[in-house]
Image (cartoon, rainbow, N blue to C red; front, side, top):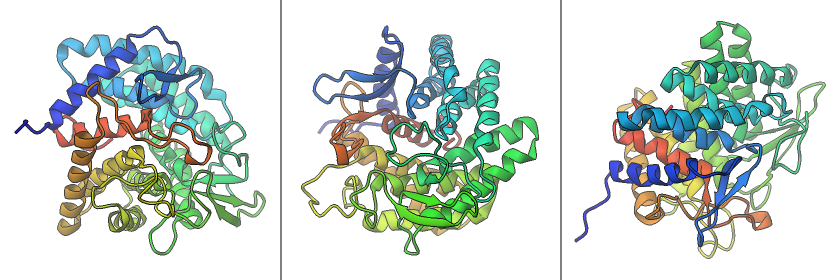
Length: 373
């Protein structure tokens, strides 16, 4: 019988792919990869996903072999500098780009240049804040959404709290904390249904802040539960509990997580939308599954309830095991991610954020990171 792959084995496999990608001559950011050729489609400016590749480089520099640190750090600095033009973009996705792509360089490696760039982005980001609605809207330059602008919000962006709370700790400026907490709380009303399922998006009145409707950019329907929306909500409120040190955020994170565990297939890998009537003859989404695994590791580290701690940790381990045994290629790509089923874009591909969250979760499970970051 072949030896079961260890967490460290899986990390090594992904590191090999990251190294090959970083050493290539491409000038953009790896976005999604073809399952046949294994070749990346690159985004020139980072889209909303560019920071995730940088983040793998920062983690690899901080947690990999000492002999590799300078080489990986140099790659990370290079990719981080490529993000600089995005500081001024009218998009709340800057929170993802610059938390993962730059702030982690400061957190994990003490990189001053990455710190300064992340702070510039955080200062620019909070100019988008609508105090009546209590949220950072998507903005007019949000890359994928068909409904964008100053009146739209979506659960994907709850994780902006990570960049804002990091900026608060770095500067002591209370406005970062105030906006972070308000943004995370308002999305509970916007997106979390009473049963723990999540609707991706909401429109609001910019003058009163009142919610006008719920809908989805990428799910099967406005009433369905798009898998990545559920995972983003789990992650966003887990990060809110962790970064804000506010246990009130554990409740929405736990509700969303328990809903996930009650509805995910027995093999632990979700379909792209929990309510697609074509199930089981439809696409999975390993990227949503990887986000969920990283989120459960965060939650298990935060709760004082030993029963919940054990359940979430066990579920995270089983989920990561399913991903690496059945969907991690020999070259180090996490395959069977579903980018956008609605338009048939990259529906069985490697998606850079999916590989990132698997990489993060593996480092936590292997004891290389104290907890999910």
